Length: 116
Length: 116
Image (tube, rainbow over all chains, first blue to last red; front, side, top):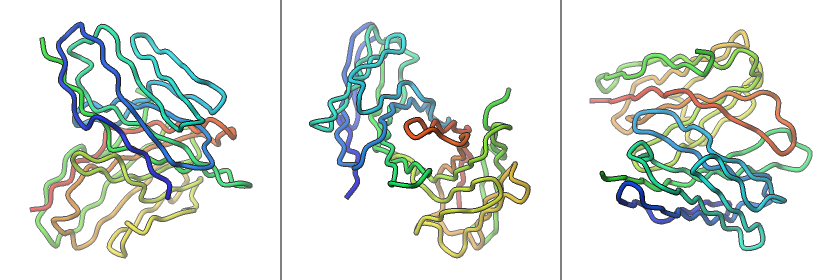
């Protein structure tokens, strides 16, 4: 069964600290993995995307890693800011052979709260 | 703003009433997706259009739900005889015809439905 599991479910950190969010998936065949940030009451916004051949991708203070062998990904946030408070969702894309439809499998997200 | 827009942003209705939501995708995007997201969960796929053709529907899309994209541009999602369990955030996303590896979906801000 294709699944995406994220941990922790929620996390509270102090402003300026670093944190790492985890994503494990069983989606196969795997095409790409994406991390989204979703502010409360808003739609998700893409932070990073990695294919199976990439093992790290950075976007400012966000760095995503991918181990396609163990089917694990992490999102590291450095020097956290209050505006980082949001839900971070791991999304894995699955492509059927001979199809152009990419099915997205969403994790439940990690709710990050940054305190001053 | 040339992103995905949704209307209304919030809808409160009484059980048994019908509601209709609208999504305007990014203008050059051929594909349009509808998702439902409940509190603390990741988005769940509902249905998908390529131009005006509805190519896939999730089992979550009961016969009370109907989606249209009549001219291949904006889309509407209608829920008939709403139930309290329909309360959720309804997200719309759009994408261009994807390359094999990258299927960037851009999300709208969502419509928050509350059924009393």
